[in-house]
Amino acid sequence: MAKRLFALPSAVLQASAAARPTTKAWCYASLSRALGTGMPARYTTSTHGLYKAPTAIRLSCRRSIFTQSAPKGNKDSEKDLDDSEIYGISALCIAITVALAVYFYYYGKGGVYPTPIRNMLREGGAAYMRPKEKQDLPKALKCYKKALELLDELGKNDINHGRDAAHVTGLVARVATIYSEMGDLDNAIVTYNDLMERILSSAEMADPKLLVKQLMHTRLSEERRSNILRALGCASKLAETLELRAARWRRRSMVLADPALAASSADLKEAGRWYQWCLQVVTLTYQNHFNHIQLDKGLEPTSTPSFDPATLPKFFSIEIVTSLFYNAATYFSKCAQFDMAAPLLQRALDLLRPAVSKGDEEGVCRSAVLMSHLANAAARKSDLQAAEKILIDGLSLAKRFSKNSECLNSFVALTYSLGTVYQTAGKTESARVQYRQAIDVADTIGDKEAAQLATEALNRA
Image (cartoon, helix red, strand yellow):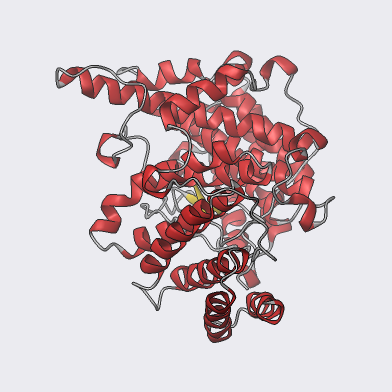
């Protein structure tokens, strides 16, 4: 079984009610128009009856498969710092999870920091930027927090070190990350809220359309754009962290596909608001950008853009958008909101389709992961024929790179899930074949939990 994907923190959100994103009906309406709704046409069937698969395979993984290459940071600032850091969300779902690519742009050039602060960053970097087993997180946290305190003090009289300066908010992001890695969810959430409040006004946190207008402005400064993207990543991390804190108080079975789940947990309800906020920033910005392209071509604007990656704004990478769609979809799936989850997963697949067509290994294996979730959504909507088609298509992708760990994990999840679909449909012998394949591959890759689940399913079949 793959290891769990990541963890984070905190006390109740300190943002005022006015600063919290809304969940009014227009949120769903605008997202539905941009994303389209329902199962993809090529998978839609009219199968009736409840999906009652024996046991969904719960492969939760901590692997970051949506990686993003980025130039290294200035060594005067910290030892070989990456400009981006990859995150993922632990989704208790029917397949392996996909990591969220979040850009926090931690540091600027070393020269931007006064010497005492630069020295603290070097010391913190020496404790943090090393193999996991050799990290000294408490020491790194102490150094970074002290550096942040000094920067905030300087910022009171020097606008260049203001609370919202890119090199300052980047340091706040690093502090939140370390709290997260230490498992201190409460302080991580507090720090993520601090980061949001440094970058955005209460009005901007309440109404994402204000940020859409800024992102579409041709004269927006690069620093402001970077800060908005950092806030977008922070909001998504905040949502994920709230999910994780809620999961600490619930058994696994209670976290899966429960229509009343969000309403029963303040943390999950807040997580949903932030996911909707992120989705609106991304989808409305993309829709505006797409319609500008349409108008330039002499075509009519549309409420349903193509999600061709070539039409994305340059500041939105495929990794950012597909990862956000995936993470939000896993949240909606947990809350049994499959009509919201399915379009998000399909649009993520649309963005990856050119990479799949070119035979790109990462694109192919990511798509296999997404298809396992899309099949789950179809099955939970009582559409077993659609689920079967999606699973078979997903397996054809997973088989293309048999040495890729993500494709292997996807193969186990997809094969097991296909077995449950066959068993539910009364095709017992076909189900047994799939369970045996899942066991064989799970044993090969050392995934004991998956092998055990598949073995139990085989014994029941």
